[in-house]
Image (tube, rainbow, N blue to C red; front, side):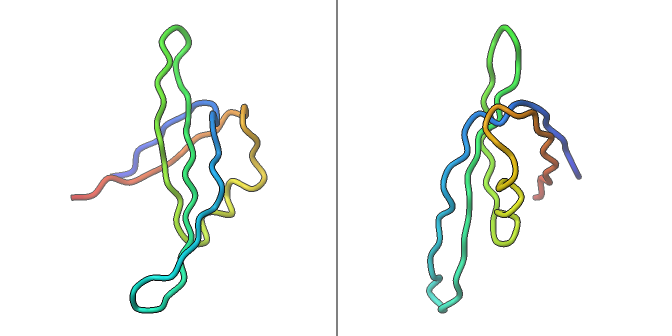
Length: 72
């Protein structure tokens, strides 16, 4: 089931890289989206692999829409 969340890109963390136990390289990037006017809500998301490139052209303070999936 796809969900969407809109808000302002509050914080963009640096890309973190590493190597898994079986020798594969990986990378991830965390970011926080702020929403709400009177009462602020903050939602933290993580991008993995090639998806980390999606944030390179977006600056903190810009409005974003994040589509994500929740699975069981």
